[in-house]
Length: 115
Length: 112
Image 1 (cartoon, rainbow over the protein chains, first blue to last red):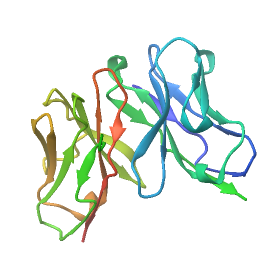
Image 2: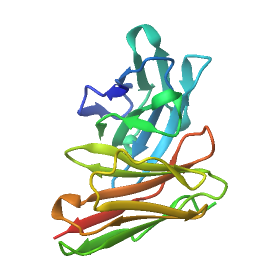
Image 3: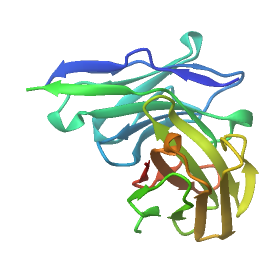
């Protein structure tokens, strides 16, 4: 069965520091992978997605993610974190049959940003 | 585009009462999803529709939960009777065919 693991429940970084949020997936074929961000009291906003092609994907708000098939990973990165990036981040994988419309979510990583 | 619209934003109800959550997807999106988010279980897909037809309801926790999509612009998620353990944030999302989902702001349900 498809699954997503986000090993870090909570991460704290200083403003201006680089960020990497980890995501590992389990999927039988080429996965469809997503990163979403959720601010308090809000719904989820899509940051970026990987379907195929270039394994380094650029997203909104200066985020990028790299698909590494050999490691079954899709880590999210940002070179310089801003205070407004404090939120919860969810990695997700497309469900059965590679459908992009049935997503399995990880448990999320809560990012805190120190001034 | 107003995005995915959910109502109400907050709902407080007594155990045993019927609760109806509403969702208006983005126009032109032909897939609609209902998710539930809790601290204990994270984000769970309850059911999704494609072209108004329920495709997979395996995530619906019990018979007390039902969802309908009578037309392309409206869906409901009903809980009858409601229980305290149903307290959660319920999200609706919609997507175009083959696309990724756009989420609504959610309905925070509290059953007392």
